[in-house]
Image (cartoon, rainbow, N blue to C red; front, side, top):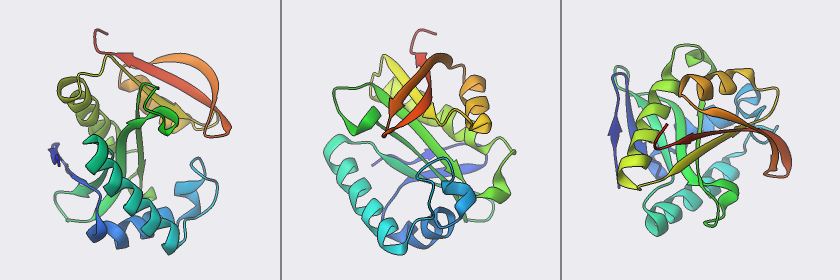
Length: 169
């Protein structure tokens, strides 16, 4: 499994040791507002960790925990996964951060590392990212990453703004 490093973060494949940090982050309504709309229960966090471990084993990619290098604290999570969780679809980038780290460029820093890894290691021709249409902060990260707005589409049973980045862009 792949550990990625950036200036301020270490991205570790999510496993059981990340439970407490993930639960602390995903139980916050403001973090989950644009994801599921509901804070995550401890059981849901444990289930997510099991799914992620299975995807790492099956595909060789999934979700990373963002560990702040300076403090060792879990400050976010991000992924490469199949859009809509369907291998027939392009690869999707995703991320979320704890609220006290919003607006500091960490999502962009992590997303750049994940995108580079997906292009280089997975030989992905195209990466997409989706966000709820009213999630201006995620859309800003997508634009700063160099992604182009593709339009509004339904994913995960809700309308989403879809952005894409091709390896040749």
